[in-house]
Length: 136
Ligand SMILES: [Zn+2]
Image 1 (cartoon, rainbow, N blue to C red):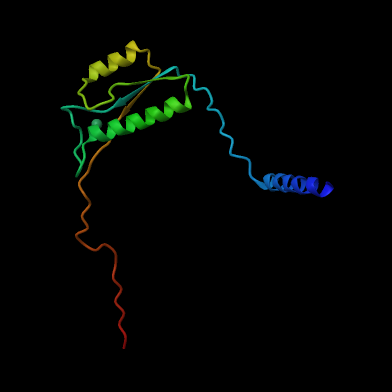
Image 2: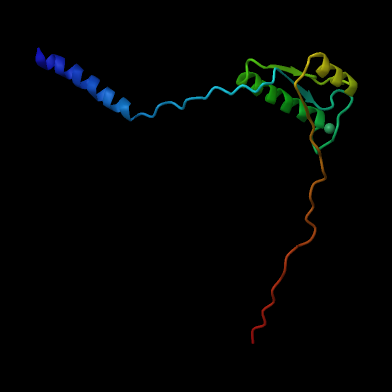
């Protein structure tokens, strides 16, 4: 009888011993309050206004993607904060409309996202120095 009780008790003690060596899961600190109630995220350009043109993309698509990703992260990190977007799809919105949108919604912070493009760097010549050794 005692042997029957010792085996489960030993197994339980072993599990508790193992568990004591496990790291506690990282505690996620709740985000601190920002004081911002409303943030406006503005994906630059859109629709007929493509913005900068890269080798295989347009600025309007990149800014929209960035805006949506940032907004999603902000909504998750600061659920008490209202996150509004000037656009969530590929549509043209005039700049005055964007400003009115921010003002009408009492935006505390307006983040306008833009990216730029530049031609590919061409390495047409070697830059550096060459050392000639004369061996006699
Ligand atoms: Zn731009």
